[in-house]
Image (cartoon, rainbow, N blue to C red):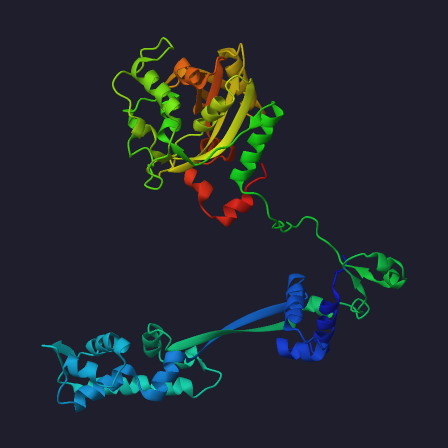
Length: 501
């Protein structure tokens, strides 16, 4: 079988055949082949080795030079040597005297003291006390000084094998005293198989890697060679921009609801306790109103609400108004109803929409951010998204609500859906929505028919079917996540691997 060679490999092998009993270096081959770029030689050499036409060797050497602090120490003296000479010559070796001297800079005092202590110098009563064997310290410091001078003597740097290991390890641990470079020397030698390649095979030809219209207009391609492609090799995955998985999911949900004939609505993050809770017949002493669940605001601390609406809510909460309900009993505070807060659900948007369009049949939905004072863990966040929707029209009933929800989840790819009875303060009947996932039923949201205590104060006479579900929990389902926090971590590798929803 003929060996396929590219032009650099042919030229390099031809040179190596001329002297077949020697090792060739990169620089020698660059000179002989007239290739200026060493990378061409390295690539060609690797190709010849893979085809068993040559053998290759690599030798790695490490060279050490003085770093920024090493140059300074070689010029001005080692920090510990300057301190040691000061200890030997000074009558007052106190720390206070050292700090007021010009021996070391202020930021070097602590480092210098540590170096002296490692040599056996003690600090007693704030004064430096040298050990009895002073000559031993002087000898060590002179050896360190000589080590730096030896390294500084070579512009290229000193080969690691020529250095004292103990000294090298000592200075390695000191910041910016030394720096190193690794040098790799590559050589190649032709094999018997390489010698047997005929000169005719080594004739260089025009190599075509890409076919262009300009190329085909001439005749040069007729005698050229085409670069072979290995179609079995893995290709690089192109890195292109794409929406965040959460944004993609939002757009997917939006398109499903629009396809089902719904209209999208939106609202403000900042709401009043009245619209957020009182309008939904949530009692003012409900645990969800406490600070541990709701973010109340200091600015604005209070937002005015029309007194007529407040009076209607007061009547509903205290004794049921004209709805036939008994209400919650107790008192109703208009001041509490006007407190400013960050909305805890997007149902506030639909309630406000009903109040503005009480007798207009509608099918609306919204996807928005909500806020609750939750502890962060794998299934909870203080800031998340809700999907909200209502159907308001004469004759609306519970089977219509269940069918709508099942249709939505089927379009999302989850045909197995069930509902179970539940309790919510503002719907009756109420139900929870569950889908089958990995063999288990997973609860994704709540739904029901708004109670008269919610709709009648708003002037609405038609039944209102309502539902709400968490977007993040649905995202965990779609993306197969076990931790909700993964959605908001800037993990680029994970984001690159996510499919386009």
